[in-house]
Amino acid sequence: MKINEMQKAVYQNKLNKGFNVTDVNKEFCLLYGEVAEAYDAWRKKKTDVGEELADIAIYLMGLSEILGIDLESEIEKKMAVNQDRVYKLVDGTLIKETPSDS
Image (tube, rainbow, N blue to C red; front, side, top):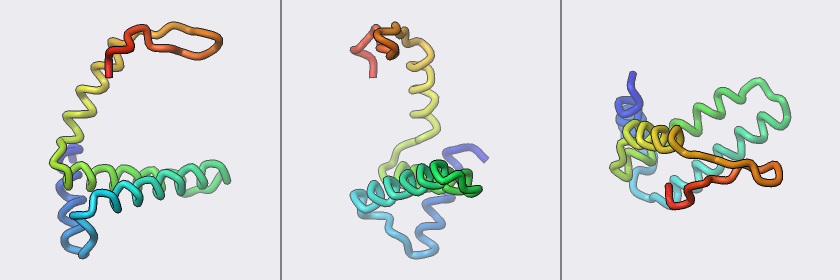
């Protein structure tokens, strides 16, 4: 299943189960909470890190569908931008040489 198909399926599941599909602020907060849960699982070396990462992806896809964003297309565009970026190492940190890029 492609990402854009998954995001539609995630949205439909939210509708079917009666979950929020209108409060964008709430969705961002819930997504943030899932990121925290994944970090906590990784930090504590729990076995459910993959499941927590899946939760992040599911919330992100649902939010993308709510906002009318084709996440698959946006990821492809951003990956192309990232691939063409040039970085330089400054005091042990990689810094973009082209700061006007997104």
